[in-house]
Image (cartoon, rainbow, N blue to C red):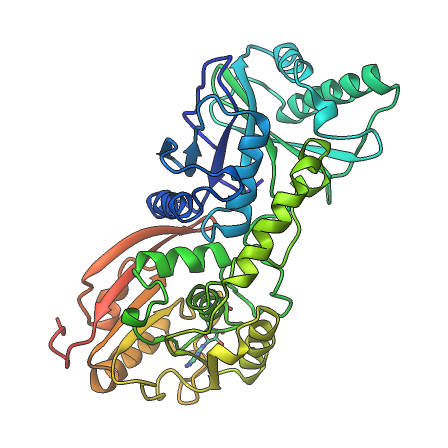
Length: 423
Ligand SMILES: C[S@@+](CC[C@H](N)C(=O)[O-])C[C@H]1O[C@@H](n2cnc3c(N)ncnc32)[C@H](O)[C@@H]1O
């Protein structure tokens, strides 16, 4: 798994189940805010109650519904899978306990009621994340947990499930710290950035979850007062489409399936799940704000349009093939949010830009163009280059650290006020 490991979660041995939602590093606070908003907004729906303890941890957010039964926790997992834009997945904690060796891990796993979670006809997979674990082989730890699940099922029914590392019905996550092990089931299956609408992608597409975190950090929530949004380097359209879905109130998970839908323990909740999805569909509305995207590559604007169509927001977006170094603002004022081409990943290729031009020249020219033409706009740029403001000769008004996978980035805010922000 490439997600940050859930850390510092040490529930008492008999603690009830809880949820852990991993997210991109630096976005934990934004995800905690999103979780609180979702709990408020959906209070009463499918048994969801506001006021649950929500804690920000390194790499994610923990939700600890006190004294909740498995179905209560699964209901919450349904909600976050369907509605969270920032979570990378929704992990449900089954159990935790101290360990010294693989025998302890086998014993911990063998105590769980796996017949609730998987049938012998289905397949499982065990992923391990580890922080300072003394074990020599993480793979062996995974194998012992797999053995425990299979032994529990064989004892109950005489047959055991298979292993499928690509599309398991039951993805299990074992998280190991120095002397503590936690067992989770992954209710999402495929990572949540896979919304189900992106089939066409460019060379360096942004994950949908990080695009949503950028918009949240910018405070842009698709309300009329948030004003127009413009991504002048939109590539396959991730930011723009994410923004359009927010503006139209489209649930991010409405177009995909989740691992929990295959679990025996979840089957009694199916009617509630269908209700939750139907309510999400019924609330979709036209956008109140204008959404613009541009890219210098015709191929990519074509991809962006096709993706927007699949995401149900084609009517809400305006996408043009244009050079960011020349394109005029689509409105007198608004918010730009973008992850422009950077360094070796993609070279800037505006029409007047030499192929071998240094990235800093591209940024200098972009800033000069914005200073001349974009007074009244705010630009939020995600970049791995801490010296970007210097290269643009602009002073940032905010700098938000954010990890794009393994790459440490910052989201810079620049307010374009008639060239007065020049250094
Ligand atoms: C890092 S990618 C953006 C990826 C995008 N956020 C996505 O998720 O697909 C940068 C994009 O900038 C575009 N680009 C490069 N030079 C440009 C220019 N001068 N004007 C507009 N777009 C440009 C590239 O074609 C590329 O699609």
